[in-house]
Amino acid sequence: MKPTLTAILMTGTLLAGPALAVEQADVVRTYADIAAAGYTDSLTSAQTLRTAIDALIATPSEETLQAARDAWITARVPYQQTEAYRFGNAIVDDWEGMVNAWPLDEGLIDYVDDALYGGPSEENPLSTLNVIANPGFRIGATDVDATTITADTIRTLHEADGIEANVASGYHAIEFLLWGQDLNGTEPGAGARPYTDYVQGEGCTGGNCDRRGQYLTAATELLISDLQDMADSWAEGGAARAAVTEDPAKGITAMLTGMGSLSYGELAGERMKLGLMLNDPEEEHDCFSDNTQNSHYYDGLGIRNVYLGSYTRPDGSVVEGPSLSDLVAEVDPAVDSQLKAELDDSVAKLAALKAAADGGFAYDQMLAPGNAEGEALIMDAVNALVTQTASIQRAVGALDGAEIAFEGSDSLDNPDAVFQ
Image (cartoon, rainbow, N blue to C red; front, side):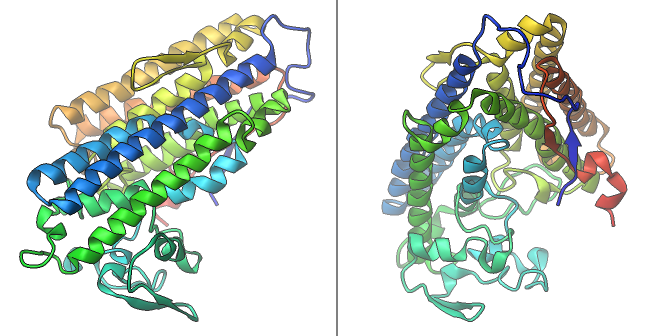
């Protein structure tokens, strides 16, 4: 279990002081409205992805494969902005592993480069299962019939034997099926799966092209189903919305918990500094597609969205309303001003990293040992995220909040443990 960073301890009920012009209930309603919009946009973009994948499987070509990859990258934009909802909301956290779990042992799903990937490990005997090549297999004492790969097959595989690296569903399973392994190490270049991996009959590469298509189709349908469930959960009458709006003080706590945990332990620690410490491109969040710089950027944007109570949708429309910033500004304008400036700074640092990667300086290269420029870009963003987390702690104190424990990371809290 990762250590946690504990926010400033304040006794009493959140916002127990004098009545404020901004109502907690209105702030939490904005938070729920942004969640509903973000998950709906994620659902819509996943449905567009399904259309592109259907075209790839029906008519495999360089063009249809590229269109499916482009649709996947576009689909990540709204989803990554929802990640600040994961921490502090048990309904989201319990669900998230089905849609965005990483890293994954990709040999569970399909063929891999044996020389680089290695064989099955003691920690995960299923790491080289390759279900696409195997119509039947055993998990523990259970025989599994995978003659046709369906959503049920994938659900059976996901985190099989209780091993988190057995990621069988979600964005990253689909990413692997579209790009294949990235075999470039810390050199530029993403995965290079050929479109012929989906050609039926003569011309099929990689073997089992029909089953690969079955898996990709079923995984995409599962993603859509899971996103529909979460969009419904944040809609009027949904369970996730009710969980934060029925007790607005708890809703405010969920907002602060999500901001602090994503900012500190998850993004700054597990997703950024850890990979840099290990110089390991396998620690990239979107490691097959080399889309990591975008995932990091939109995570940072999502944290700021929660605080400012504003989300810009893919169509350019804006969902906004009374915000956490409004609440903090009433009780401590200096804390609010500092936190807004620091949120802007972290987004700017992540934007600089994104611009460098989009311009040809691949995130893989930034992770290479001795790459001072890459290390500076990553650590500038890490440091900005850590700095803003301290101000999120101050916001907890300004609001007379009770104890909040933010997600931590050994890479930040106990670096020596990373190498043990």
